[in-house]
Length: 116
Length: 111
Image (cartoon, rainbow over all chains, first blue to last red; front, top):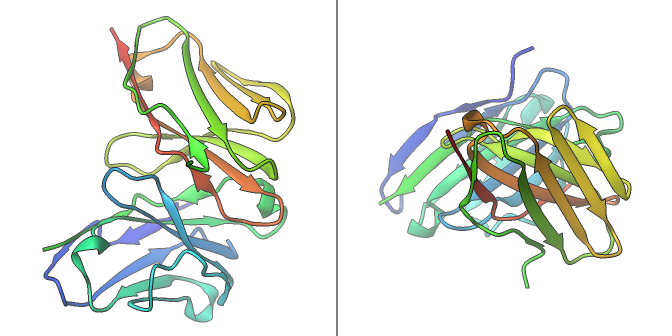
């Protein structure tokens, strides 16, 4: 079984530019999550999809961040325009539907975003 | 006060010793508790989950939960250099899928 795949693994962009991160969850996993770890801080929740629907986006920092999951498969997270404080590691994770609320998820290896 | 607190470490133990990692949480509504291991530059990997008070053992790992004290710990027996990593404690409310993470404890196992 393929794991959670994230692309790109690293991205360096200038302040004001746009970046799109992609996540391919484990096949068949209805739940998809985005998390972020900024330097020196803990990993923080951004949002949660169930299939193509946003279940909880309470962690999205502001309207410069847009997440989509068209067709309930892969997801993208767009940052537009990027600011310096957006630098960090963005993790995607997925979990199956049944009984998922009691299970930890499977994480991807993350995208390290550096805004200069 | 942080929602999930962990000592950042590093916690240094000799090979073969027991490593004890601790975590406290603030929300009494937390119902599910997880320990993730993260090697540098890699993804967090789930190693233990615990939901009820007491101990749960899996190989060299034992998770301990005390809801009254709002405390969860991870014991690693016969520590190996390959156990050197950052260990992340995460908690979850039953009503939510959201994990709340601590900042992690770095463990160093000396050969």
